[in-house]
Length: 306
Image (cartoon, one colour):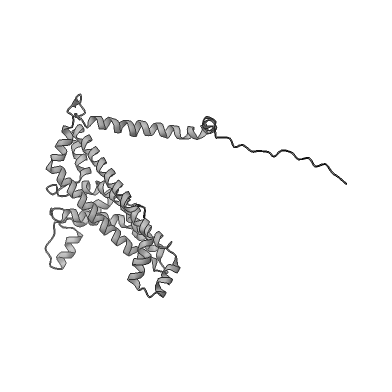
């Protein structure tokens, strides 16, 4: 018995290239959602930034017409001793507060991570200062640091002479740094604690089997597991430390003898005296510094291993 077999030609599926204009039409609702925020960003951020950059090349007090002076504002800033002092104060605050804050936060996180009870209590206790406005924290610590405040009272009981915590130019910056570390360490502690709890337990067990003690386990297991956390806190902390203002304004107003004046506080001071062109140039120098520091950090931290 013979049969006749017919075959249909195979269907060839041809993939069509996506039509960009068609996709844009289909996504018009999405573009509608982002249109208003985009307009607000351009009007209230981009345009003022560009206008401020133009003003940095002028001598302007906000009342009279701006006078173009070229790069004079920039050269005056870079040659200013006050700017150099403010820069050094900003760098000192950033380095000391970051080192102390991250160190204390890591120690607290390691301690709390080992607790089997009251973990939530300690988390909330150390995080309360973080959600407290810095102005309030600064006012409270100003009272503590006062010549007749609580701190001098306690050291007076021990027979120690009162200390000018905010009036001695050698101590004032460190007093502000201590206040800043106290207020912000809870945030870093929570981040460290979350990262610690994600490190697999079997890594510690393997290290213990290999004879590693507490320090070696920390160095070979805990520390590498916190690498990304350190990177995040470092970048976030440097930007925040360079922008320090509230505690300086409330506690010392840049004194004594400008020993606590930072770049941001100097920007505020010049703006208050209507040196708007000079202030714009100072702001853009500060922005450029932050960009350079951030790029260096990204390069060092996220450098690809060959």
